[in-house]
Image (cartoon, rainbow, N blue to C red; front, side, top):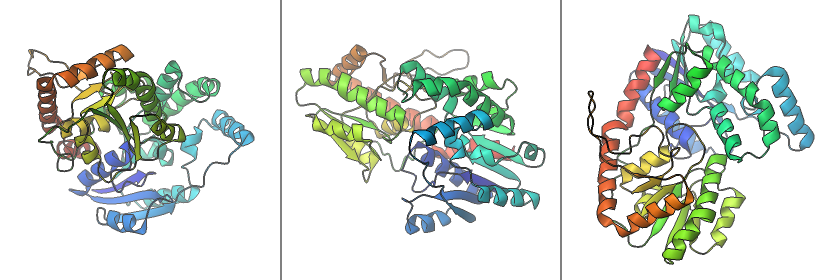
Length: 409
């Protein structure tokens, strides 16, 4: 098959964020059996070396300059909201729309160049015309639902403009529902995501394809590090990760530090917002920014703590920590899509061991962290069980096969 993959985010190297990671490994899976043309944007941070390296992973690389930054100021923001109301297209989606790209894609479909089109994340779906699914397979890879995430943020009070978001939430729901109807198949990462999306579009043809881990990169550590360092990883210009890091640093860590004065907290990841950078002013807190190796940062930490209160979809950061053998304390959101608690099996299901400690309140996090600090046998049990779970269920090789099936039909 000739496949056109559309990705607004430049997916190389596959270390910049969750969207780039999933896109890159889905690309690798398709390239193993099909001819792949990747259409993507060049952001300012993309180097010539990155472009040349990515060319080695595709049959054809089509590059367009990224759209210019949205105009600043109150009037510009009001105009964007007004545009959302009148056109039905969210501003963050419209930002990535380029008439040049639309013309290129329209021409390619008119000339029957491709048998299938994939859109990596919903921001790319604006280029797909509903009638195309009658002549080519169209697949949208929903890394996470913007509507579900925004609704969750509103419930938690972590949105920057609650009034605006509440007014536009119904419009966002309608936009997503209309978007999903344009596609032959919708790929999601968890059962929760599928349930939420099927409530919008009951007759949806959907597939659950989780995220995965590159096991050669996130190796299982043989020795525990000295010290009591907690770690949380992510891209820290994203509201969900910002909220998580602030909650961990300001509410949970001080109670841990009161019991263990030598404890430290590492906030590790790209593009830290100024409010995240400011956390480094507190004793015991380290804000690294981008690091050469996330695996090394995990290996150097005693525990991975992910008190996420929002965000839908399976979390790459959680899978990576599990693969690396770092014991995890996580929330329902951080552990979404994973079988964590032990079960006895039955009805055709195998028994499962304990793989992480679950917590959803400040006291529960502190209690779980203290428990793991004091119980080396439990730490080793969680580490071994987590690694085995990743090897069984969350390798990109296995998940890539599922993605090829979604695209090929």
